[in-house]
Amino acid sequence: MPRPFDRSVATGRRAAGPGSAAAGTSGRQGFTLIELMIAVAIASVVVAGLYSLFTVQTRQFIFQDLQMEMHQNQRFATDIVSRSVRMAGFGTSGRIDGYLGFGGSVDNDLPVVLTYDNWTGGGGTDAITVVYGDPSLTMGTDASELSACETTSLRFPTGILDYPERLGEYTAGEMMLCMDYASLAGMETYLWVLSGDPTTTGVVPVYDATGYADYAGVCPPGENLTPSMYCSKAQVMTFYVDNDGTGGGPGTPDKPVLMVDMDLDFPEDDDIPLVENVEDLQFEYCMLDADGDSAVDDCTASTAVWVDSVTDDQSHQIQMVRMHLLVRSSRQDPGDLYQNSQPSLANHVVSVSTDGFYRQVLTTEVTVRNLRLQANL
Image (cartoon, rainbow, N blue to C red; front, top):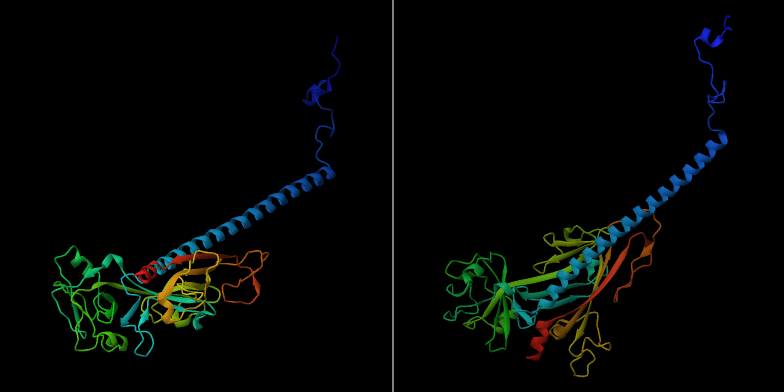
C-alpha cells in the first residue's frame, strides 16, 4: 500500500518530536525592558558602592601616609635638637672666650646656651645656639709646652692613645676649644680657629685670639696659657626655622624648613637644611632659681617655673630646656574637606586662619646635664 506523502522528507527537515521547542519564536525569547532597567540599576548601585569604598580607602591611605611622614619628621628633628641641647657645655666651663665672642664689650664671652625668643627671621619662631666639645675628639695639650696667650699654635703629644688619628679629623677653618683648669681668673674655656691643617708632629696652627676683648681680658698678651689644657673640636650649632628664604635658605611659607648653622652667622646660604615642614619651634627654660627664693628648683615638679627667654648672664643657670615642635603635612587635604589652623605655642600667638594642612605638636623636655654638673661643683 502506498505511504502517505511526508512533507518533512520532501523539504529535508525532520518532524519535530514531542520534546522539541514549538515552531515560531517561542524558543528565542530575550530580556524585557523592565528586566534590563532593573539590572542596570543594581549594577549602578554596586559600582557606586565600590567607588565610594575606593575613595574612602584612598583618602585613608593618604591620611596615614601624611601622618607617618609627620611622625618621621618629628622624631628626626626632636632627636637631633634634643641631643645637641643635652650636650651643651660639654668640655667647657659654661662660657667661651675667644673667637665668636658674643657682643661688643669686654664681657662678650659666648654662653654655651644662647637663646633667641621670637627671632626676627623666623616669623615668631624661636632659635637656640648650643656650644660643646666633640666627645670623640678630646685631647690634652702637651704638658711640656708653654705657650703665650697670643700663641698661633697648640701642640699635642702624638705618642698617646690615638691622638694622631684624632688630629687627622681637624681641617683648616674649623674650631677648637680648650678648657683651662688652672687659669688665675678661674676655670676658663678658650675658642680658636684653625689657620691650617694639623701637622704630623702634633702642632695645630691657630689664629691669635688676643684680638678678641673677652679672651684678652682673661689671657692678655705677654702672659702664658696653662701648660696642660683639655681640648676638643668645637661644635657651635644654631637651630632655627626658615620660612621665607632668609639668607638664601630653601624655606618658603608653603614649605618651612628646620635649619642648622655651624658658625654662628645664621641665617646664611651655607646653613644646612634638616627637616622640611617644621612650622614652629619654641623653647622654654627652667633655671636653678627661677622663683628667686635662692633654692635650687626641681624642674620636674608641676610647680616648676618655666620662662620664654634667658639673658646671657643667666644662661649658665639653665637646668632644663622644653622644646615645642610643630610639624605640618607636606600637602593639604586632597578633598578640601579638612580645615585646620596653626596652634599657638608657648608665647607665640598666631593667626586663626584655616587651611587644609594636618599638624602635630611634640613637646620634649631635655636636661642640660653639663651645666647642672658645673653648678654643683
